Image 1 (tube, helix red, strand yellow):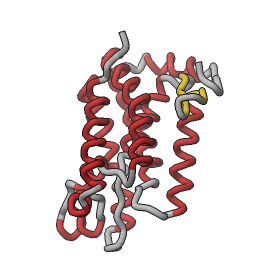
Image 2 (cartoon, one colour):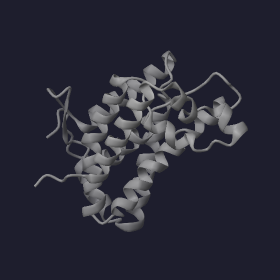
Image 3 (tube, one colour):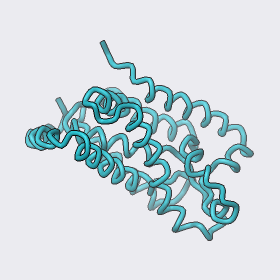
Image 4 (cartoon, helix red, strand yellow):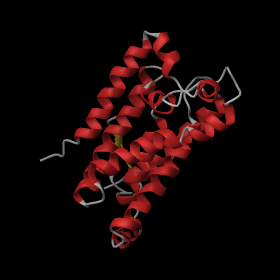
Length: 215
């Protein structure tokens, strides 16, 4: 039976609902988007969380939720079945990435009243790289048709985010992808070291058998 991944599906549902509300309600956006200037002056720390459930448009929402669907189900199953903390660890991974991936942005733009950003990119990146640590060569179908390995997908994912971040043409916090990815790797590595260090041998063996198109 396919694992239903209730927490992943719940996160996708909340992201979709909140994003669609934001699409037609600028007032909601203004109160919840990551706005470093107001975080600093009004202590509106909720923005570290709420901005992660907003998206700029439908393509942005789809891209993040498509990625979360495939990788979130895997890491949720892994954390539960390998006894690595289960739902609690999953919640810590996702929420921790939302907050920590925004901290560099906050520090950089806290005195810039014009800078705002939004998106689940940091948390999704953490989920992606946490999953790849266990299954680097699993298959994923890009656009539902092009078969590539999870590792190749992750590389393309980060490249896209870095490229878009340099364009600086929207309110999407593309820089958060990189910090989220680093958090996902660090958090999951620490989790394994604390709870099941024997898994490192399996991970190393898996990395020794690469597959560009997955398997």
